[in-house]
Length: 144
Image (tube, rainbow, N blue to C red):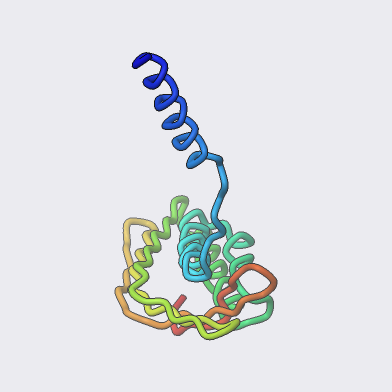
């Protein structure tokens, strides 16, 4: 009789455990989406994937234009150097969301190396984003 209760309890515990692992994915919060946009933008810059970086920006915005400026600078360096690296790191300190607009306060560090020379910058700045559809896009910042 005790063996029967043991199996019933074991079965119920198993059902409760498996129901918790039903594979339901909770939707990402807007704050997480904002952070992902900024981080993916930085990764695209590191990879010098300019079209990918622009895809995280509002078309025609200052941020979109700034990606093209970075691309032009790197392309000029490639005319003189065979290896050009861009290391771009963003640490997101705070995100404020107000409807379809968000402001992120970030610490950015970047390093460009070419022909044995290096140029770096380390700054705190605001990044401004707009929600378009279900995704967040960067539209302005002082340095990004």
